[in-house]
Image (cartoon, rainbow, N blue to C red; front, side, top):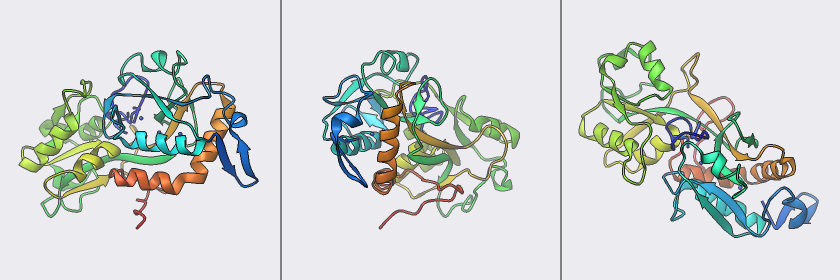
Length: 292
């Protein structure tokens, strides 16, 4: 989850995640037929390419090799627009908005929490949650809330300064918690991967990660891991977030076209996300099963 000042989840990339950063056509297919591209991208500063603002080393969201799921969603948008995707790279840290969207060096950020300043949000293109991760078929099998008494005395990994820390404190679990760094240079450090490795080795019993990050690295784990969205937690801070595309305030034509893109391509977007292990939720916060 992205915010304008966070690294790729740890606060759904209020980057989810976390959080963080994913999208329309030289020709856009509408119910009435094909519409010329120039009419569809009137808000864009440069209409010759799809200019995306992204972090160069923030998997599973984006990287310079185009390997992240936000890269893939951007490619899908580019295909629908008939435009090549052109990136402006800048770390998801302080100054991200000012140096990218704000400076008009690019026209879209692929992942922003709904309601996050200072961008104009589109409709959400996915919803996910912070997740509890532990080894399958172990003593925590079936745990789906931090109030479960089986978590008492367990060593739980948590990203320092992230929202789940408040819930660990509220449930009397902070005394045995192990902190992992929030702000790091992802080219050299990956707290999420370290947390997953520690779960596998038994150094910790469980960990809490933003869903897109936890799901991605758990899918690559050497041991089978459960990735459980924390949708039963009540009160603040919230654990469930809707993720949008972020654009500049006032660019309403661009927003409407992106909303149309999301509506027309939601199934394909979901397929991309689930291929990376992103735990998707519907409007009732129930898991969306993968499409076979």
